[in-house]
Amino acid sequence: MAGAITAAESGGEVILAEGQNRIGKKLLATGNGRCNLMNTGAPNYPGGQAFAEKVLSVCGVEQQKRFWHAHGLRLREEQAGRVYPVSGQASTVLDVLRFSAEVAGVSVFNDTRIKQLTRTANGFVAKGDHGTLRADRVIVACGGKAQPKLGSDGSGYALLTGLGHTLISPVPALTQVETETRAIAGLSGIRVRCGVQTERDAQVTHAEYGEVLFTDYGLSGVCVMQCARYCTPRATGIALNLAEGMGFDHQTEVISELKERMRRMAEQPLERLLTGLCVPRLSDAVFRAAAVSVKGRSCVSLSDGEINALAKTLWRFVLRVTGLKGFDSAQVTSGGIACDEFNPRTMASKMVPGLYAAGEILDVDGDCGGFNLMFAFGSGIIAGTHCARD
Image (cartoon, rainbow, N blue to C red; front, side, top):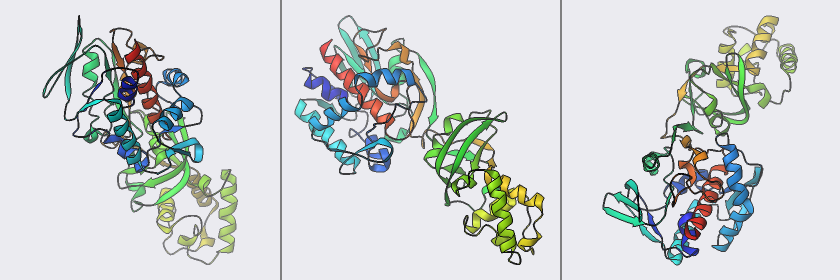
């Protein structure tokens, strides 16, 4: 949409072919319906960092702010550099885009899924469900494979590979992690703040900190979703540092705390030992994971070995990763059309004259916090500007 608006405002006669029955459906789901448009912090793109930085050096935070302000959208910066519309509603962003497209003279064809794109001596021919469209230049911005029910089903890849571009195998990113469930039985719905790290071959591959949600199938929460890309088939596990979320800096501090509690609560039932540190259901899971039986025991009965086991478990509650939630649940796609086949300053194909690409269809994906929409809008604005000028 940003590309279509910019191209039209730059003097182009623009047709926007939309596969859904209404433009912008996926935008309404972003940022939990609040639409986190960008991030004022350092660019954070685990996939395609170098290419994303080049694109954002041309159309980054300040340029995109000017775009939004010029079209009537006021913005507000919140925690960690996240930028939202002041309304707090994604629908406001979509209203601005739809109105701006109408004013700029963009012709929107809904329910128009393009199935084949070919280059001819006179431009491009786009064949779809309801006939054929012809154009001098084309911007392909079909998204990746995440959230297929909202239109991003991966069908756009064939439009570019059919013209000679390379597809990097797409996989779900920013999605929930499936784990063994026995260790977390009964914890579904519980949220905790803790450290999260993925491990492979006894080596830490990635670490995050934030809120984790226990589910029936495993783990969710922003910090878990940002770990998902590192949960490869060879990942041995995902470890939760519950103690870090309780305010402990070292495992020795946890041991001291448990010993103090044992002395203070000597005759109390052992199952109450962690009262005040976590909810009872999580306490039960910690005792199980540490292989410490609580039945019929008082706190004073704890051995040094059991205290060490509990401290170790609180410091590193390990779950075996069994898989990831698929594209239906993913917020973004890792993989896509190879970036090195496009010019980051114009978004033009290096292989096919008159062809441009923007957004998630390319092999670029960022962390949560507005980075993905910022790349999408930045690349779209660049593509629209140069598509009309070149």
